[in-house]
Image 1 (cartoon, protein in one colour):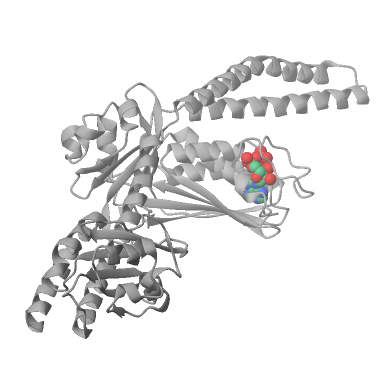
Image 2 (cartoon, protein in one colour; image 1 turned 30 degrees about the vertical axis):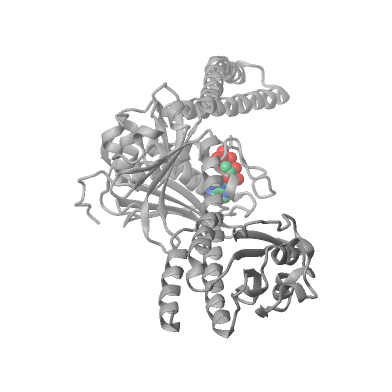
Amino acid sequence: MSQAERLTRLGEILVELSRSPIPTHFFQTLGDEAGSVVPFDYLAVCLQDEDKRGYMVHTLAVPSDGGIGERLFEAHEGVAGRVIRVGRPALVADLGAEDDGVPDFEGALVAAGMSAALVVPVRRGFEILGALFFAGRPPVVYGEEDVQIATLLAAGLSASLETSMAYQALADERSTLAAVLASTADAVIMVNQAGVVLLANAAVRPMLGLSPDLVTGRPLLEVVDYVPLRQLFAAARPGLSELPLPDGGVAQAALVAVVTPFGEPVGLAAILRDISLLKNLEQMKNDFVNAVSHDLKSPITVIAGLADLMMRAGPGDARLQTRLQDIRDTAQHMSDLVTDLLDLGKIEAGLDADYEPEDVVGLINEALRLVTPHAETRNVTLQSELPAEAIVSVARTRIRQAFANLLDNAVKYTPAGGRAGVSAVFSAGADGRATLTIRIADTGIGIPARDLPHVFDKFYRVQSDATRGTAGTGLGLAITKSIVEAHGGRIRVESTEGAGTTFVVELPLARGSGEQRG
Ligand code: ADP
């Protein structure tokens, strides 16, 4: 065979080698095909073990009488050990005369009648993975041309080994991921951009009554009847939401956009967590608070009324008068607390079902009028900068209450001579929907940074010298937040201690009320 013919044949073998990432496949190819470019009676791949203590011999084409040790040959043993150590090919004319030879490798080959050997390193970059070991019986002898061809075969083998390792790593990663997905109690469903289900884990069965095998690979809208889930994917709005479950429970649904590491969109994934138990607990807690608040309301009113009566009718003893005043004030505080708790219960239970499109600017102005007397007694200037009209779908008394709370706080937490005000502008919200952004700002005592994350929590009040003398229940902002969120809006706070506070409320404008007058 001419050198040109050998090279052509070699090309074919290299292509063949790259066909499969499975080592048994390309080892087989090498054993079957390499003989047509480099003659041999024995062929083996010697691969270093992971901690480079030595090498294992994988025989690809066996001499008739075998006898090669199935053990880890140490790095100093055999011709292969030397080639791996020094990283250069070895051409051997007489295996029996080799100093490095070991009885259960070179010795076994000699016993099988072989004398010539050609051993080339298999490298990956600067690293030596192992060696390719050819041996033959006379008349086989190896020369420089064989070294070149064998080196190219070794390069092909190295590429195959590399692909195989990458493939294995990927397969391991995939199976880890699959195991995590299969064992999690959260239901995970992923669809591609065409709406075809790419993945549905085992938890979709108990939670949604879907069979993962039946839905995977099919269009979601064809295989899923459950309306809330269809709506979740149809709306395609990434974020958290609550999803009713077919069994009457509730799941928290996280919808996320899936993108490749290169930023190309793949589709949408929903992760559903059953929160029915939490919801029930919360409901029980709220029911309890509501029941207790309700039962407290009447006796407190009676106490306050009686204290009032005694103050007016009783003897003019000054000490008794102060005691009665204390009773009155305490009863008033308890009454405020109970009213706030009952309000919160109603809002959280979603009892304000009658939402009507209404002009919020009018409601904000009403709230301003409500707090004006308070502002005048405290000598705080009230300002407003509002558009003429903005239509929002609202529960009117609640929204007015929310703004009254915020404005009242602005007045309450601003020292005499300060300013408190409200302004509103139209903008496009995060989801592109037209939004009214309202700012309630004051030049008051501000909120320390460490308290900022908590001011919307129930019963949270900032404890400082500046707030000491100010009465309150710590429920106003919790109520306000619930109201704003019940209207599909958002609220946040910005503040600098000692300089002032701004509460920012975003309310989505009623659909179809595009003609807002500014
Ligand atoms: P409270 O009944 O105590 O006013 P809120 O829930 O309305 O309860 O407010 C919680 C806490 O947040 C208040 O106790 C106060 O410390 C702080 N806070 C609220 N609004 C302001 C404001 N405009 N300026 C400074 N602090 C405020």
